[in-house]
Length: 115
Length: 115
Image (cartoon, rainbow over all chains, first blue to last red; front, top):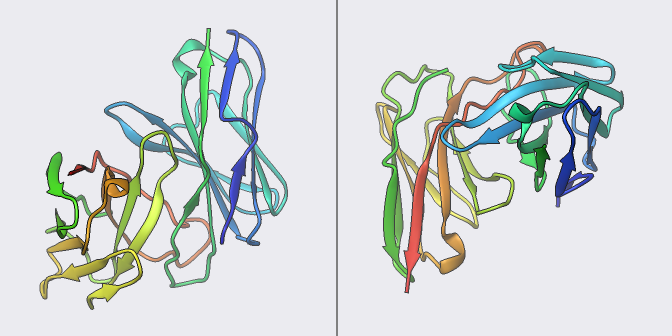
């Protein structure tokens, strides 16, 4: 079974703090993704990475950065947390092969509250 | 990516088949139809995907109409554990790593399985 794990299920941080969310996958997937999920807005893509040290902005990258130093690990960084970043954060991973289509596997999510 | 339309909610009696419809009238010839579900407080779970032909796996069946403008996800014997939000997504295969495998989630169908 593919396993995508996230470092915390629940996290409470203060405004202005630097926050790290970690994601690890064990299936040697090329692609990794960070989404956030808010009521009424569905899942929105923040950033994705298609290889080590490679990244691309998603739909809502403002206020976030990412790091992928190893293939299995993808980190989401909130440089200075704000209350509007309170949300559920979901990590996902998938294979990639040109012209093919592969499903994404999701982690359990991290519910982040910024006070 | 093509947009999808799903009913906001459905009920189903336990043990009966749950048939979840999805309209994707603007789908392109190379776009796949994916189904995911999200059980409360968990990350989305991949169910099934298809291009033109009907597909079946251990979880569900996917029926795609001949013109590919709509599809139906069938859970043959729904149980209480199938209560979740079900998302229908269409997207093309990625031909280079830059475009990758982005998923655009809508608001889905909330399926309630009842005793």
